[in-house]
Image 1 (tube, rainbow, N blue to C red):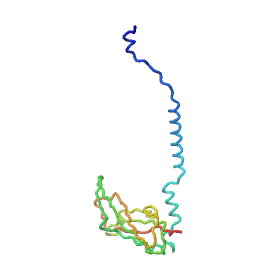
Image 2: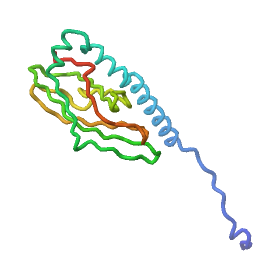
Image 3: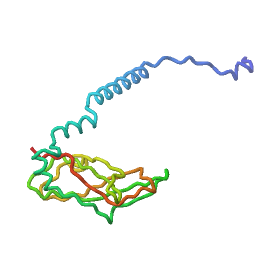
Amino acid sequence: MLRMDEMFATEKTKRKFNPVFLLGIVIGVAALAAVFYYLSQKPSIEDQTQRLLDTAFKPGSPEFAELNKDIIIATNDNETIESPTGLGTISMFIKGQIHNKGTHDISVLEVNVSVVDRQKQVVKERRLLFVPGQQPILRAGETVPVSLTLDGFSPKAERALIYWRVTAIKPVS
């Protein structure tokens, strides 16, 4: 006959080592290591951008002057919005259009956007790699929209005008 304590006693089972579980961990760690290695071999976005800009024409070169005269950038004042942030600053959502009236397709186009006060002093500015950042190629005769955000304006800062300036340009080779 079984005693009462023997009848309700829980039987302790020994856990066995599962080699499939260990194999899964090893494969997972190896896969993560391979992904990290692959990502570390790719150049950073900054390096890729710098490589693009190194081959582009800059202000002062005759090629830049020839290509720049065909680029027209205009702000859409009706669509440009100022908005307060939770930190007590102002954000500006600037919209515009870039028109290539020339005969060359553009593969690199960097523009500088400046917000200035009435005395033409820069309040805030930002550089934007428009082509190929927002648009793969700016074709000859094409007009495309451009938008960007400038954050961190003081509510007391005067924001009178928006200036666009091309800072780097390269035609399709």
